[in-house]
Image 1 (cartoon, rainbow, N blue to C red):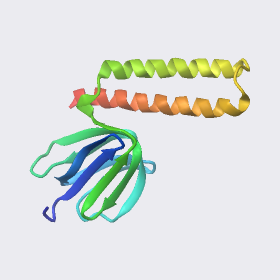
Image 2 (cartoon, rainbow, N blue to C red):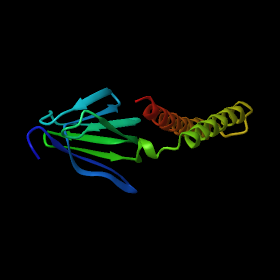
Image 3 (spheres, helix red, strand yellow):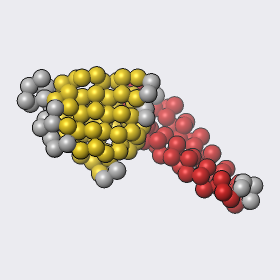
Length: 153
């Protein structure tokens, strides 16, 4: 590893997607906004939104992207570690399947809200269940956008 690179690690509970890969830059979307980290960056830790994380390997101008389904990122001067709830290369995402997932979540949310309005769900559970489905919908939309975005390069 040179002083112009640092190591990238991207893992989730079910897979190690990137393991100690030398990179020249990493970009992601945290709760406070988007950021780019480079070798020697000031250390920080933040949570990640369901979104694409990009990185650039030495000698390349091309950005490689992975989809991270939330989690945390730790940036240190010599490495970036991503602990994602889920992660996958964007070219692994089936665009049609992602679109169907969005449709299913939208229907699920609509039905849940209708049941709540009709008094068919206990009030204490309604808000929690709606938030869970909204979170799943947001992740599905983010995956769908990630799949579409790869075709726009």
